[in-house]
Image (cartoon, rainbow, N blue to C red; front, side, top):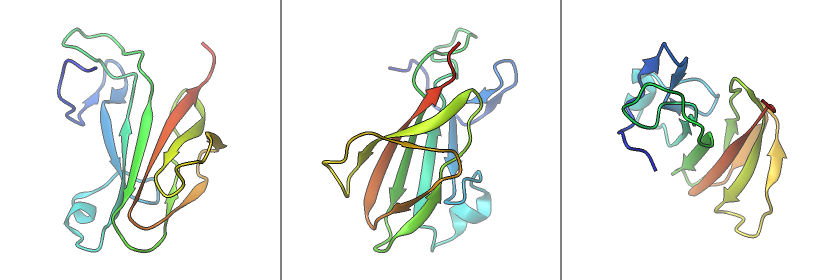
Length: 127
C-alpha cells in the first residue's frame, strides 16, 4: 500500500518514475497517443523501486505491468524492458482465467484479446 499518489515524474535521485503509461509498442505514451481517439490499448507500468512514502528512499515493492484493451479486436502489445529485470511473469489474463503464470521475455509481443486485461510481474535479477 502506497502512502503517496502516483505522479509519473522522474525521480533523478532514485532513477525511476513511479508510473509510466505505455503505448502498444512499449514506448511511453505522448500527448498524441492520449489525444488519439483510436487508441484503445495501453499499459501502466508501476515501478516498485519508486519511493512508497514521503521519505526519499527506494521502494522494494513488486514492479507490475497492467495492460488493458478496450478494443473489440486483438492488439499486439510489446513487453517493455525494465532495468534490473530479467523477464515478465504473466499472472492474469482475463480472457483466459485458468491460465497459469507464464514467463515472457522483454520485447515479446503478447496478443491481447479484445476487451481484456493483463497483469505481469517483473522478475528481477538476484541482488
